[in-house]
Amino acid sequence: MNDGVPTLDELISLIREFVEERNWEQYNKPAALAVSASIEMGELLELFQWKSDEEVQKALNDRKFTSALASEVSDVMVYLLRICDKADIDPAKAIVEKMKRNSKKYPVDKWQGKAPSKLNRT
Image (cartoon, rainbow, N blue to C red; front, side, top):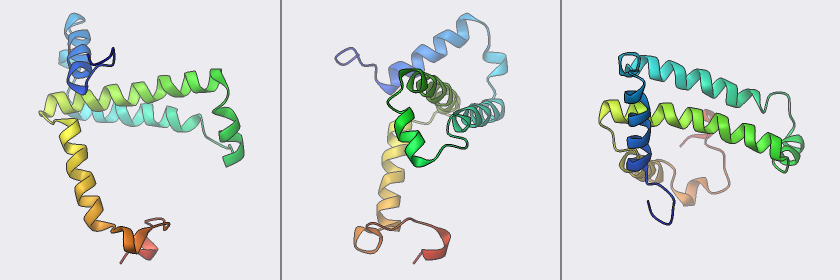
């Protein structure tokens, strides 16, 4: 751990150990993990359901809301990191590579301040 903050590899090891201690490996198939990540993402989205942008901003100052938000974000990330572990994907490297591709796909001079919707792709 660097300054008490675990690296992604350390988090993956922590999650793997948790799964192994409970003999849950048998349930941690990639498809099941992806489904579970999607379900947890739905729970994350539920926190924002029917809230205006202003209500979300206000909620971000509410400790109860941010605690629930952190819990749901953690659930999603645990499943995604578990998928990475099972598929032998280095999540940090995958993100760096994706950002490189995105930089080419969305050059600053054409996309600065613009939302990348399907309607205005170049």
